[in-house]
View 1 (cartoon, rainbow over the protein chains, first blue to last red):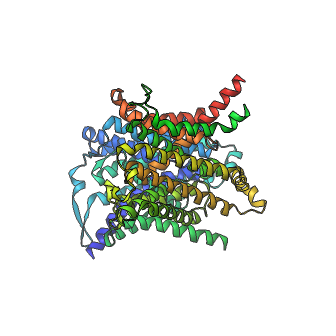
View 2 (cartoon, rainbow over the protein chains, first blue to last red):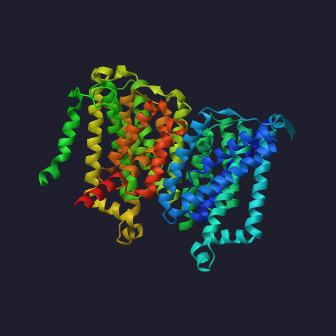
View 3 (cartoon, rainbow over the protein chains, first blue to last red):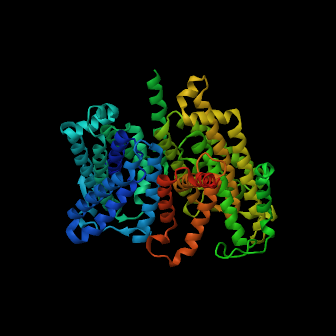
Length: 283
Length: 331
């Protein structure tokens, strides 16, 4: 029983990480039709910012630095690189692909390609008793972070004017533009929000993996893509549900099956969802 | 003049085929003379990636499908032949067709699922499937792939003419042959009626549907053909580097193919080839020469990534388009 609880908590920790990355991807894709390959790089920027700031201003300050760095870089990328290519979807994808390649290489040049140990505070490396199991604090920390972000995002989308514009823009962008609202301002905002969530994922992921590396974001990005497709693009709740499903599936299958089988199962889940969803639509 | 225009590719192939007999060097471009094994190896890789990029362009530039799964089929060719030769002891003559068949079959299965969605979702789904290949390769699935270190090729199963540094020139010919075959297959496909449907799908898929043709079947055909060409390229890569490692299964390979095609000029006859050759050459030279360069310039991917981003903004048609524009200006 305690094994199941432990697996569930660590699996949910992984889900939380996926959700933090996928929520931004999903919003950006839903609103602006941009498949953002550089999103994993935003996470890396956040992770390194937290790595740099934590020894100076403490862990909480490091997390804030990671969030700010992620949001800042994402907003800048939208303004400088994505905006000139508005409506050229493929060109936008290509630019983010180039940015992800060049960005990772830049970090490899600046900080060496090797992983570095993240200066996580002592209390995050401990375990606590939870439902009869000893679960790691860092997983609980990630889950708490993701729940806060989920609640904040839903509240923002539900009760603010900009949230309303974003929700309407995801549904029908032309209509919002026709009503005289500049949707492009919302693009920058959505990029910044996604970047902030990715930066938080970078900082908390640094604690979770106990290290930061230039390629760390890219490897998580692919599972975030899977979560986004399963959850439905543009839907925050969908991303949350899909992240929980993928994270738990991966953790349990990796433990009870052979190593790596869980990752394959996540892709199998994606295939099943695609096949059945299409049939449901046709029916 | 028209003869020259029509038959120059034959001359170019002949010149490339005779390169192993050229003892001269090009200082500053290659380290040794043209017929030294090191230079021939680099040239062979350039030609191979020229072919791989041309095959990938069949999807991206010709049919308008943005697939992120091409590395999977290259890896199936390389690992498939490697496992059959090294673990099962089959001769190359059996292992190579079997590996290509494997790549083609998997391409048909994955294409059948992935093509149920279109556009960006298709890109994501192909990426996810390719990731399975990368995971299996890196995790030493069923004890076959050798994990992170990869699986070195057992050369005792190869014809003796393809083994050893002195025979690099024969591997170079293998690469050249692969490139020529890919160019012919892509050219034939593109100029056939099927090719015109593919171009139609790229430009306006709904219109093709309205004409009573089934877009799904034609896209699947392009996907499977590109997968087969990629698997064949994987076999050539296996012979060239005498082994297979997880890098060939990773998404970076697909992304670099995409960069090659966009740099060269998507949907043009020689653009992807040029892009592939240039990218492979620069990647190699920047890695081996850049020791003296400052900061990020030492990283070949940084330089190539930046060039790629600039290309998307300032010359979206790639090198092929640039040359055409320059020609038109002089005429």
